[in-house]
Image (cartoon, rainbow, N blue to C red):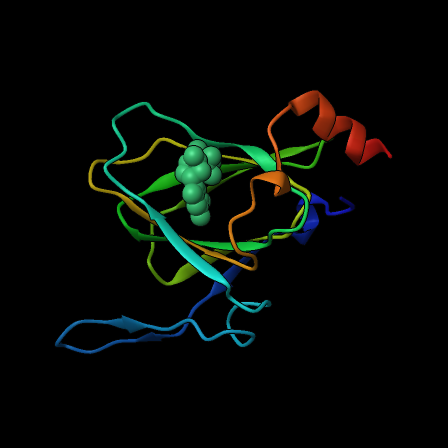
Length: 137
Ligand code: TYD
């Protein structure tokens, strides 16, 4: 739970430009600094809805706006930063131990999340005051 905002990174993914259409790539441990155990995606988000609003104890992730745009607000218990994702060749790397929320989804936006762990409910911290206590510990 030691991660700070300064550990969050925008990763510039390879972009192969082509008149037939562009192509981008993510390779495990090359463009993403962890072994990918799970991929999920968030789509059909109604206007104004917010996703996330929790932290993970172990899970590291890379979030890519494959289509459209949305904001990811990251909080290390002291400072907050908002990343606006709107390009399919940028990945937002978020280490474990940071609070994060996803909001301002545009119509037809598609958020892909690559995760370093399988799904585990007990990896979630849903309570913000518990999060702050763990950060202070
Ligand atoms: P959750 O991670 O809470 O969504 P968000 O943080 O974006 O609001 O997940 C929503 C529901 O989906 C919850 O019931 C758990 C389930 N879920 C899985 O079963 N497997 C998964 O890999 C994920 C990400 C969620």
